[in-house]
Structure formats: C-alpha cells, structure tokens
Picture 1 (spheres, rainbow, N blue to C red):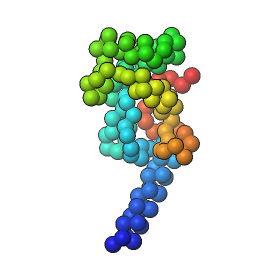
Picture 2 (picture 1 turned 90 degrees about the vertical axis):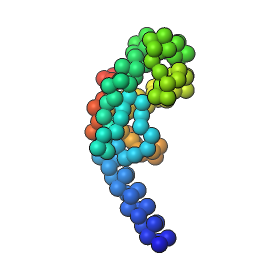
Picture 3 (picture 1 turned 120 degrees about the vertical axis):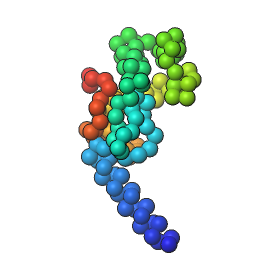
Length: 124
C-alpha cells in the first residue's frame, strides 16, 4: 500500500508538471483576480477591477503600496475574507505580474510559460 501511494504521488506530480509546462492551472493557491472553473483559471469579475487598480496606481502613478492600500479601502474594496488590503497582499499581487499578463508557472523551480488563462492586464 505504501509503494502504491508513492507511485500515485509520482504520477500525479508528473501530470501536474506537464500541465503547468503547457500553461494550464496545476493546483495550489488561486491568485487574487482569478477563480477556478473546470480545472482552469478564469477571471473573477469581482476581483478584476481591484487587480487593475493596483497595477494602474503602482505602474502608472508610482504610488507606494501603503497609499494603494488606502485607495482600495476608501473605494470600499476588501479582500476575499472581507478585510483591508495589507501592503503584503498588494506586494504579492505586484510580484505576480507575469501571471496577470497571461503567463503561468507552477512552483518556484519552473520558468514562466504562456498561460492558457485570460490576462487581466496588458503586457508592457
């Protein structure tokens, strides 16, 4: 039984890696701005404007993350859990820019590849 569990884990891991190399969602934490439907990343229409605003304020207006947090709060935007956007959350979104431009990677070891999901922001 133990050997069978190892074999299943190996096959599952290889399958996830192969799917990720083709740009498909392979599991894990779902990035803010997206949801999962039928095993694929799809744009979350409620979260999309928040992601767009974060990148606009940061990239076009050079606003610091604390100010972006205040802007989001003042506009009534909240996190998935209903809280205020913290600098760490905004930093996480900004550091994942390639994903929001339509790229994908599974884990830190893999390189970014063209994703099969819809981008939220335009590639610069």
